[in-house]
Image (cartoon, rainbow over the protein chains, first blue to last red):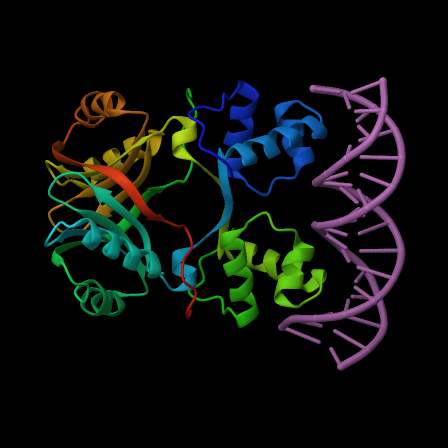
Length: 162
Length: 162
DNA sequence: GATGAAACATTTGCAAT
DNA sequence: ATTGCAAATGTTTCATC
């Protein structure tokens, strides 16, 4: 974690490291070293440097939503009533405080915000819609798209250039 | 990784472990043990069990998109022409093969698919739209929503019940 | 970037509850 | 069925080249 300098230069070895850690964050440093063809010491120094530069933001475990009773994913388009700066900030803050809202994006175009919401079932979603979203002042309209099947989900960013 | 049994029962200790690993996948087992109030041996056995049951799906490093030159995120709604099973499967397969497509969901309603696409800039996005999306047979319509600001992004699922 | 050594963590068997 | 202990193995980390 540090300042977002416009470009930490990543050499091919750094990219290899990032690519592996994006797939398996718990790989042992010794094994990572093997895979990239270095010894553990310089490998670890590179990983620490990438962490400090903020290129590696964090390490997380991804759970299976079905197995923790979060079977339903819904994408929600939200438009706000009066477009004051404060109204937008308040809305974003509310979304940050709700654990069922995994992602919230401010957008260009007709849609003001896009949400990704993850709940146990339709009943829980309806409660979210009525008790949470509709209860926020300034919410003019919402449009819910129910996800039927996750065809692809990855957190891995391509590492072509930059 | 194993069969998706409908419900591995998670006791409060399991939930504590999952909650910590969702925040910090690289925590040392000894420290994890400290935080949940067990000794390292049973802690590790629980983690391994959660991995084998598939509750923990994988461990990943999350990178800063800006620092790896992926500054632009776009949400795309796609509708397909002829709704044959094969057409849908082909589309999904194409999306899986494209590294700039991070997520792809089959949806209910007007939208057939929702995509989350991550590219370096508008130029690259335009190329994706023209050379990739529009080039897939059966794509009737696309609607792109450009993300201006990420207000919230988490991969952590709430662990209330189940 | 490599080596070697010390500190530390992971992992296993076994006894206890 | 799950924990704690302790010993063996493996990993991380740092000084040095």
